[in-house]
Image: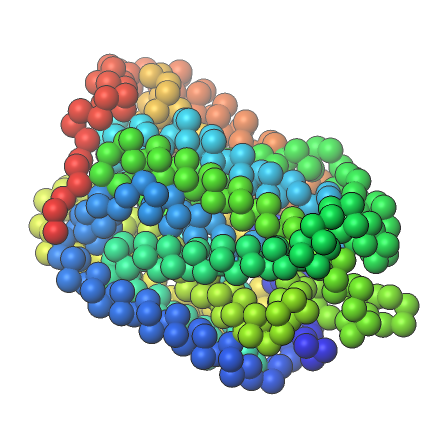
Length: 553
């Protein structure tokens, strides 16, 4: 493990933490010796999921089955699958790295990510299931003028999906180089092909079960590591934290706030982005249509909240465990006591310290498997936007038959798969912090305000969403481009025009204002129809009468 090298900071920290403001200087990635045990474990995971895909293919003969698994996933299963979407390799590796580096102050990320789920549980999940069918765009289009709304929402979805796919593909290439010693290009192609196989042949059935298996393995592996850490600490938390404080260069400061985040406005803005960005991610929202009714959707959010909170609690244990036992091992520090490995690989090194090569190989294989699961969910979300929102509902006015929709969905999957592979090569050295920051910016500053006002405010109009959504999108993109991390660090210019890297504290209220302003000033006939239709829309949201039901297979 001494041979672990430093992954480019723009990947290893920024992709992990959705735009954390750290150094984005890129250094060459070097290969490590091939870990045969890790490769074998990963191959076993791939074979198992391909078998699931084979059997899932027998159930995927309709658009309902392809996009939503026919609504036949239980609340518990769906909650675990949602948690699988959330528990990415980025969060696993990056969050433990941040806790390892900065201690207590890094907990804003898991707190924000966890708080997002009660928001979704109480404000969105149940009504979403009652109102939609395949994608979150269905909810908005049910009430407002369909074609322009679907175009705006589909463009937002595809922007998020493509940017997210780029980030994941670059992450896959860098991660497999580090963990397995295989070439970047091979990793990108391999992930792209497997992603297409899962989605084309298994649809949402296969994607869901891939997530469930991955989430179970990751939760099991991290639970085992946490128990081993506590066992090595004699289950004495005071001894555990004292050991960490004594080993860390920052000493007792790792137990204090203000070590990593020094600006309260930037901190609060980041918290808003993490919380409300999650509630606007299309591949997360799509999962509420995979259950049979609103009650199961509510259960999905409830179980997801529990699994995610438990996972982030484990990350806290692992992060401080790495301080206590990795920094306390002379093999991984120099004479001055400075850590000599790659910070973002610290949890992998911790696995070797705790359980030798077998645990190291298992955690490495699961880390890479998480990327496969996440990109599959992203791909099916993008395919839904193309086949259902754009082709069927917009261009064909809802008149395309199921067989044609399925064909278009699979073609869209292939296009997205090939595109993600190509873009993975093109953007190998891109600043992923910009992309991921933009993803959460769009989701939290555009999708979330539109969804919330659509469900709860009768005054929202089609013009309000069209103009407010587009201007909100333009604003958040502009804020990101003009921020210090882009203006100064990426473009090499001086004196960033916008002072914060995380614009959510400004862009979210701005979009709410734009949606409100363009709606109240809309005196058109269509605006009157939109407002009069809210009563029936709200009745369906509350009762579920008229909502699509699960189909049998």
